[in-house]
Image (cartoon, rainbow, N blue to C red; front, side):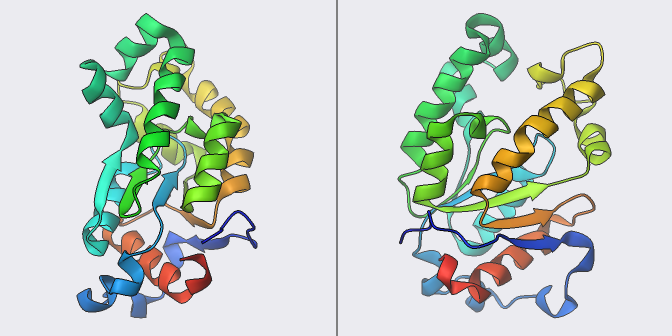
Length: 209
């Protein structure tokens, strides 16, 4: 399947879900047609819900879930802030690209990427050409609320983390949109509802999968 030629991404707000899609039958969710397709990549800012929604989506689809940041930490034996401190952001991004290259070849995967993985044109090309890209977006204030007490965010270790987050969002958002097949607003999300809605969208738009 070649999804590099994309039509306009499907855009859904989590606050306007159709209730008829909230309780999708398990047999429908895990049908062979849905499971045996290309990788699913979740992109978006820190705090958008990539890991939590990704785990739920993978469970419903009976796929393997991989959190790219967690894999990097496990490989290095230290947390991401330590990697940043020792190798700098460039060193971390190199590791990130290497792991993305590896896991993007797994067809039965739901992969939560790091928020900055899309900064590399090469990474964006991998994501665009190898799988379905779901952009989980959220309002700036929501992102800040979710990340403000998380000390595992080296890029926010500044005097004004809100301003830094705003700057990162402004830089990255066009790149998220550039590669997205599906866009969903998670600002006021229920994890399971969003996972089910994503499955409904994937099934409805079979040309994507």
